Amino acid sequence: MAAAWLNMAIALVLAPLLVGIIQRTKALVAGRTGAPLLQPYHDLAKLLRKGAVYSRTTTWVFRAGPVVGLASVLSALVLLPFGSAPALLSFEGDLVLLAYLLGLMRFFTVVAALDTGSSFEGMGASREVQFAALAEPALFLGLATLARQTGSLSLSGIFASVSGDGWLHAGPALALVAVALGIVFLAENCRIPFDDPATHLELTMIHEVMVLDHGGPDLAFILYGASLKLWILGALLVGLVLPVRTGHAGADNAVTLAGMFALAVGVGLVESMMARLRLLRVPQLLVGAAVLSAFAFVLILG
View (spheres, rainbow, N blue to C red):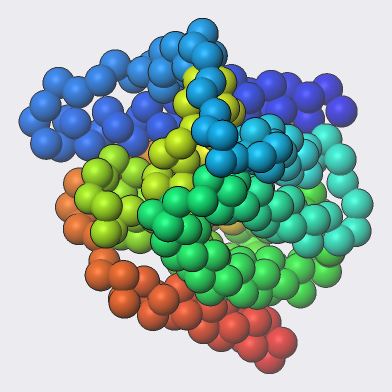
């Protein structure tokens, strides 16, 4: 239990650092000095010191969106195993609850955007929901494949059972799931090639357009929640690709943490070398991720 609390604290403290590593990697590849590695922390602190401005058009839904979104992702973090340590809360079927908590976060972000009455934010909300509806089957099928392979319906049980021997016996299926989860990771966190968190082009914005009217602490909650979501989905991917079990909890956590930082560097490299996909191509890639997960499930059944 102490290890689970420690992992929870590590996630709460280091989640914004992943965003800083991505930004720093992109700056180095582009030959720029770039922002400091700890810039996300400074941004959060600055926003928390500011006040929030609310339009007379909005209702309580707009104010509740960032709070409920952050509460949802914090609840999902409780269900997340890390390294060889189990989650703080574990039970059969918690993988379904994790997906639904992330969905609840998205739902309140979308309804808060719609509550502004802006057709511009409504456009971004429509795109967000469309792409999420295509990404969720890939996530569910991927988790179902892992559950079938390990014989557990709990995230802690699943990732405790994933090992090097499992990769030897079911390597192709696990590789397909890893690719599918990688695609979902990029899509759910609004990273290139699906979305550009730094874009200012109105016709191509997806997630960023939904939070344009938020400011101050509300925007800080949204940004911090987004970094925690990045951590959660990244931990699922790293836990599958790097199933290190040395028998020492500290060493296992250190390897997993190094994998998280390497994943952030990888995202920065991908965003430095790739351009955004056309919006018409995004659904095709997400459907492809679902097909990969489905193939993996069939391989496990066979």
